Length: 84
Image (cartoon, rainbow, N blue to C red; front, side, top):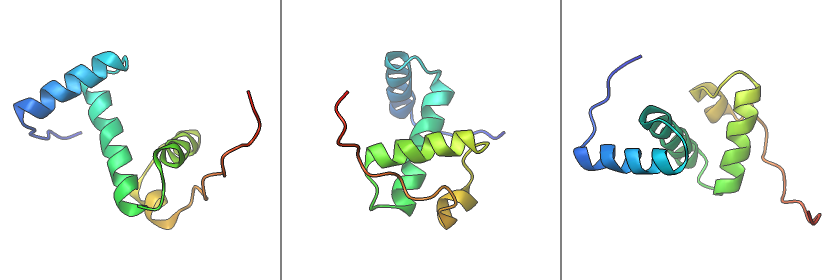
């Protein structure tokens, strides 16, 4: 574990978003970093597809940069046309 210095404004943004989504400040920061990492590495993916990757990664033991770069988690599935 390491320490990352962030601005006071970003810390407040993390606090607000974390409270709204029932996450700690650290969990919210890690979530945004994961989403940002996948967005930079796979700009063709939308938010839904990135969330699918994050779920697959969690089921596979956690997201690491090797999975993100090599696409080991596969391609996110197409949206379902089935109504719920």
